[in-house]
Length: 102
Image (cartoon, rainbow, N blue to C red; front, side):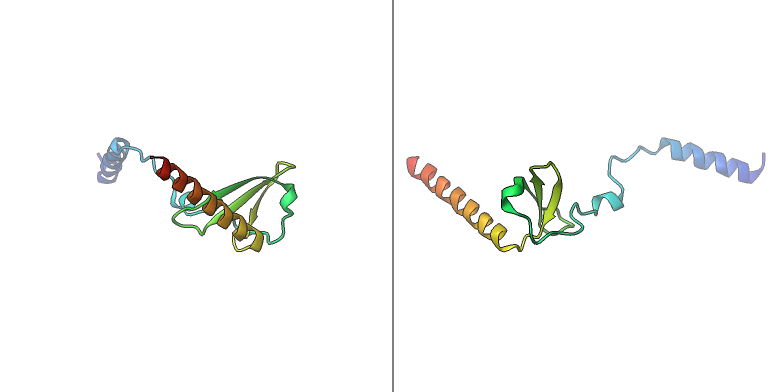
């Protein structure tokens, strides 16, 4: 048998025995959901807000609008910063109330 053919068969035999990985390709892992953000989104048109924080991407805010379109909002937007501060304060207050009850 030819040495090249024998080497190819051995390589194929080894390749078929290697377990498949469950990891996603690097290009999908490192991809951020928000590639661009909007600074002006009318608050009344927002149905839902989602907050994403992944290791390879900056903090991302995704707004689902009433027309079911999803857009990324700049996290530095003034009204959004105020919304987040209010939400954090509300959580802190509810935790204080729970700890006082115990």
